[in-house]
Length: 563
Ligand code: GLY
Image (cartoon, rainbow, N blue to C red; front, top):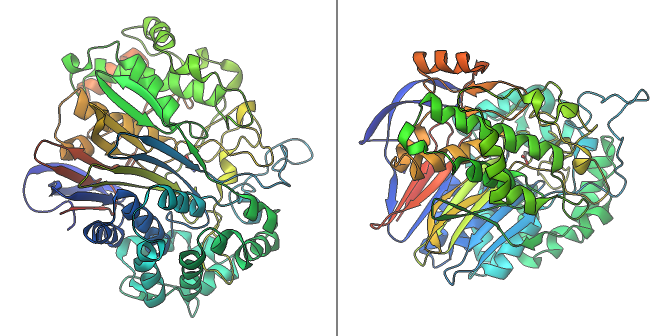
């Protein structure tokens, strides 16, 4: 059932890109399981798998493959993702299925002879593509932690690809926005248009080649995707549009099972993604700083609360851009960045009244940016308390915009998340330094922040968001709304958000986030305020003594359903 309907809270909210609609948000409720995703078909699939005896991991894998069919703008076989998994026996895992740079990638591959970044080269077509990782992430999760046979878990996705599904308004809209770029790639038009016209609302989209790939994976597991014809098809497609990915790059890809990153906050344990994502490190640094301030006393939306939140964001993002990269390639001072002592030093230096100019922190890295929001997140819990938090992406919506001919899935444009030239921003305005420079086989830095908050070792809040760099702050703000401001889940998700990421030195704010006198107070403290539509799209589950509450963020097309 769609999450926002019927009774409960009446608040102003944003659907898609508009904040103009007044609606009502009521959490979904269940005692046996809960699934919150960006798509109602994917949510229904997750619930079905839970009802059929699957655990939360089975449901997450089923949702992941289904999103690759019904949510092709971000769900994927040709992208990457991160998985945070809590098992009922108390064990916790992170799976890093982030894409890697192909073997032929090189540090200066996006620069012209004068050493300047060539605009668009890391965003569109073959050279923007990283070696896909998400399929190995899904299969690793299923093999290690799932309960049902893989073909059973993949059955709904195969059925939806084989027999089609009805395109909804949201998909029609994102197709429409991508129309011009789709037109550059004959394989993309082949799969997503009829007679030269992109599929629109109400039409049935059948994806036979994609179904064949899914059947191969269901039958052969990892070998169905990383051996045989698929690596060759990916390489052929990528190279035909200027890329350098080889079949061997694809065959050699492996997801990595890691320890999740843990940080304590006001007695809760917060578990999130370690590098190659920056999400967990930034979240931990911000929480460690904010623990010094009595946010509860000031309250949600107060200028003093916002001041401390923004300063924490600014410092964490500055460290992100200076220090973070793939820990298999570079040495990252994780121990220091995650320590309470480091946060103490920062907290003490924050002026209680005035904004810190971003230029004062690492001035050598500063550069102007541009923005974007994409990706998708889903949260799942089962009746035994197994829980999964997954964020997965092609980077931009539809990634590189090119579909693999003969296989029917989009390839990512994740190479843009590397520092093409240290000090120059990517599409999210994230700058990055040497630590995130391009090297063959390296994972590009991400902001994806799949997160779980544990209480007494058990899941209390499961959440994450799409939105590039805004992901980390959207996750932080929903957490603060629940832990510090004691909001119910629906309200915590709907509450208007802000975003600061060190550079640019501005504070973005959603409509309603800053009332008039707060705006005046923030301006007098030295902040530059920039209005912006939706920030993030959080899919969250809260565990209460009565059962599970699920809310799909009304800023997006999502759906939460429990049983
Ligand atoms: N591609 C967006 C991210 O990984 O943060």
